[in-house]
Length: 440
Image (cartoon, rainbow, N blue to C red):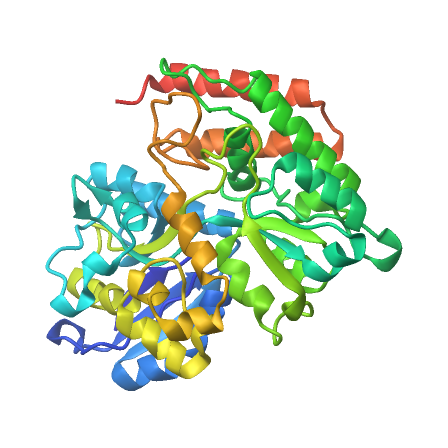
């Protein structure tokens, strides 16, 4: 039996399409995943996949997101060929494509309708106009808040709040005696965890990762102001143990009514709005992600997509699976089976043009605006030599973002001061860039 290993992080997939001759032989698929809502939905859709592909057996492996990233990156970089389909983001895709590690997603069927993909999402997965991965879901960031707590406090959330306003609101709605904290934010270290949120804070305070000569800027006033605000917010108005809280933990806290506000991924909108998963579903309000000095780079852009490694020995079968799993047909199948709130968001214009979707998900226009307004090529009020909003699209960033994320957590726990942490981050980043040279 051939083994087709499929790695997925952050989202779920399923496949229905026609079984090709290449898949006629019995094939076992291993899916490694994190326990995000879209993946849970995908797993529940497997009966439809099994009906269409009775000769494919699907096994599941669940890993923490950071560990999953490491395993996939190691396999791709070594060319081991253990996986035929990998889940990648708009960070890895252009880097890996330029290294010839990914197979171009060419000759898509007409029914796939690649022109329907939202432009910022499609561009982030392309190199020289050629797609190297197909998006499963995409997200920006948004401010969630408890309308009932705001009404009780006599305050109103603006459409585009500032971080200063967010802190003021947190002080007015916090009620520890009732088990309600002013705000939840990611504190778990990781370039895709706390640094996703903090990177946008730096942008909104007018900061940047590098100047035009690739000199790190972590000791700048903009970084210090953003870091002080981050630490102040979470130490005074956040829940305890925040350095253990990533996306999933924060989502649970907010949905359980334990946080008055939460700034995080737009993908959680359906989860916190669904009474089956959220205790405060009828009380949730939405606003754009906070800014401070500038709106540039204040809301991130992130895409989880499916790609086929060049090292795959099952490329045609893998491509067939990826085509369907990211298609309009899959979105419609989920809508028919689970309702429109359950569809993977952020990838297709047709989803946001659907009256049924907008009716079920009144937050949809806000999410569409957030995704379309994110500009990876113009993420800072200052000129930058890189692309990326909450990350920098260079190979060195995984190590840099991981280390700086650890220093952010050390600041929150009081193990180091803001100035000390940022100086350490500056030194580490500068050393990495000197060792590897300026990106080309």
